[in-house]
Each structure stands twice: as C-alpha cells, then as structure tokens.
Image 1 (cartoon, rainbow over the protein chains, first blue to last red):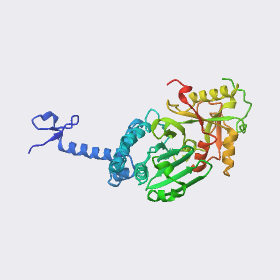
Image 2: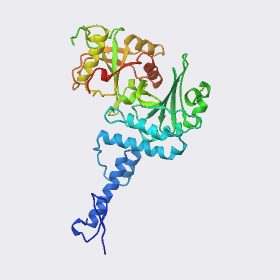
Image 3: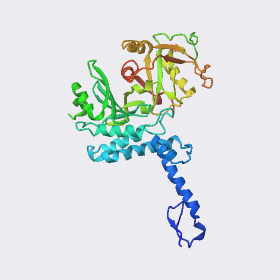
Image 4: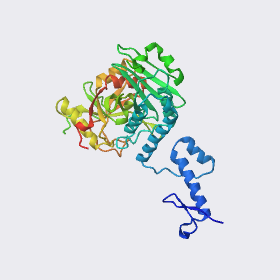
Length: 205
Length: 168
C-alpha cells in the first residue's frame, strides 16, 4: 500500500520515496483533527465554539492577538457580503470593504470594545440591499458587537444599529427638532420610516 | 500643569467646567463618501461599557477646571493628562469636549438627571489605575441610545483630534 502524507509547510503531498517526510497515519489523523477543531474555534462565533464543544472536542483558549481577531472580523464582513454583492449598486462593494478596513484598523481599535458579530453584518447587508436605498451609509461601531449605519442629509440624520436576527434599531433626527426612535425587522424598516421622508437619506438627487 | 482645584473626592463639578472624553476611531461618524473624514461623534462613544460582564458604574472623563489657566489651557492640560491614563490614545481618535451645564441640561430636558463629581484616580475601586488628578465620574448616565445620540449631536458634539496634542 502506498501512503501519501502531507507536507506541513508546503501543503503539497509527499510520496513514500521521500521516507523521512512521511507522517505516520495516526499522527496525520490527529493533526487533521486538530486542524478542523482549530478552524472551528478560530471562526470565533458562539455557534462555532458550540459545534466543537458538542462533539467532545477540547476547547483551546484563544491566544489570538487583537490584530488577528480584527483581520478575521474584516474577512467575515467580506464573506458575508458575497451573497449580497449582486444586489449592491456599482462600486459599493469595494467602497464598503474600504470602510470596514478603515473602521477595523488594528492600530486604532479600542481593545475594550467587543468585535462586531457576524449576525450584525448579515443584518447590515439586508438593510443596504433593500429596494429604495440608493445612497451608501457611513459605518461605525456600537461597542456592543453591532455595526451602525448612518445617513446624513444636512442636519437631518438617520442612525441604524444592525442587530442580530435582521432587527434594525433606528434613531432619526430631522432638522427643526423632530426626533424618533424604534426597532423593527429590516424588511419593515422603510415602511416604518415612511412618515419621515426617508428618501432624503436614501435617494440620489 | 499645576492643580488649582480645591475640590475633594465626590464633590460636584461646577457647571462651567468642561468635560473631555476620549473617543476611539470606530466610534466616530465619518463622511459617507470618505471613510477617513470625521464629521461627528457617535452616541456609542458615551455608552457605559461592560467588562467581564459588569457594567462600568459611571462614565469617565477629564475635567479642564482642575488645572489653572484660561479655557484653552485647562482643556489642553486635561487632554494631556490622558497620556498617563490606562487608555492608549490612538492617532485617529479624538477628544469630545462638552460643558457640564450643557450635558446636564440636555439630559434633564429629556427627564434624565445625572451627577458629575470629582473622582481623582486611583481610588479604592480602581487601585491599579494610573494617577489622574482631573478624572471625573458622570454617574446615572446609564441611558438609552436615543439619549446618547442626542448627547453626541448636542452638548458633547465638539471634538478635537488627538494629533493636535500628541505625537504619534
């Protein structure tokens, strides 16, 4: 029987002719198992950690640096964008990526803030791909694990916190003093804002 | 920087004092067409944070009146004091500056009464905190995001970039 092992450094197969590079089968299996578990934990969300826990895997304490965690968060944002990309206006995808790269800059991040949850990113993309939203928002961090989208038209502003499970929490302020706040599923948001002429924030021209 | 304040711990801060709060980059409002251009401070900058599941008992800020001099000198001294804090001031961050009476009245108009008192560091609750003689606590400010947003667009809307005060 021919065994094919795996070269750890080059990730290319190693054949038996190079005997010294062969990893014993048991060690190989253990190595792969560890990699799967590491990947599950590395993703970093609660559900992924639970995945490892429910399968009897040993939970390895995260020793990742803040820079690595922010890198992962930027990557999660970009992965999350993928299925929504076709619904985004031209040029938005790259600009949104530039915005998230800037906001999650490891040189600027406050270490006491919670990283933004994947579920919040999902809500964000559902929000900005709503039919009727034609202006890209600015983004900020809630500090509690959610991304915030903001639109401003002169002194009128709309701030939407993207909560998990497709829930949008809005706070609006209209020039002249009118204010309103509320929470609704993203799909109902435009309906809930209809009394405040949301086109001032969402429409071009 | 010479202290001229005669306040004792837990004394209320005079209404004319200026409170300075450090705001990290991710809690700044940027222009929609330019993610590097700051146009304001988000309400989340004034939110009490949780650490190890426990919420901060108060909002921290530095007080300009602790030091002598005019308005500008007081604000400058209070900002420079952040260099000795546990906060690591970053290049693109800013300092939000708000007058005590404006902050109080902004919230009072919405039915929320806060208390601003002198709380130099370290104290018994934070014995490991670095020395900060102009630290103040804003208590009873566990308010909803609507009020925080009002604060950030009202009484605490002014800000100065960290690069004006520190070399990075």
